[in-house]
Length: 319
Image (cartoon, rainbow, N blue to C red; front, side, top):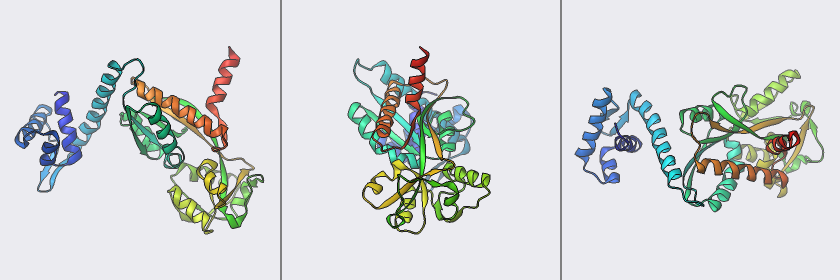
């Protein structure tokens, strides 16, 4: 097995067709078919199920695709690092990010990073934290911004931000960011919230249980834009970080207020897999990400406590 065979296998798996792959790689289809057969013979297992509509991965093929994708990306990153010039950063960075955070941060960090490092390509993968953890450990994601979990083994985790949560409603609700509302008052409202497996919903339900309250959630929606649209139309209130609605609040489309008794917040971290060499491109992305979040907090766009800054101050004080 060599890198050429792995790359050919990945291309066929992605396209699901020998003819399309042959056209993309500009090689004869019989030669391509022969490479796949040789790979299957070497591994002593069938990688594809062939049928009239194309080729579908078997269970063994799915496993090889996961490993091969990681191996090829590491080779690409290694080549980029070894051939890197003094001031150039090249390669590809695959970033995992929760959907809510992605809507807040993805466009900003992409613009910032691509301006500074135009020779690096980015792929942003939105997913819930549970999936991001799995993909980090499997090497399918290089770096992830995610909500802190109790158990985070085999990861290098850097605290980023403790984001505060706000009650959000229509302009007619006339909520005021200068006047906080007690958590108990939330239970008296009709709410639209993410589904039961979403970290935000779990946090709210746990606090409601502590206070012996029952949340009224007739509508569930995982998409941030849907939550905002329903709140804007007055169908229900919702709970979100301020960064996700600051533009709508400034434009008078939504109103918001902090939550107290208790104040609700979520801890965001930056995670990298342990035991894997971090490429220069990933390192630079992590640095630019921290700078972008710092500026958003300092500009009042993202309401919360900057944990990265707190760590730096603590380290300086110890010195």
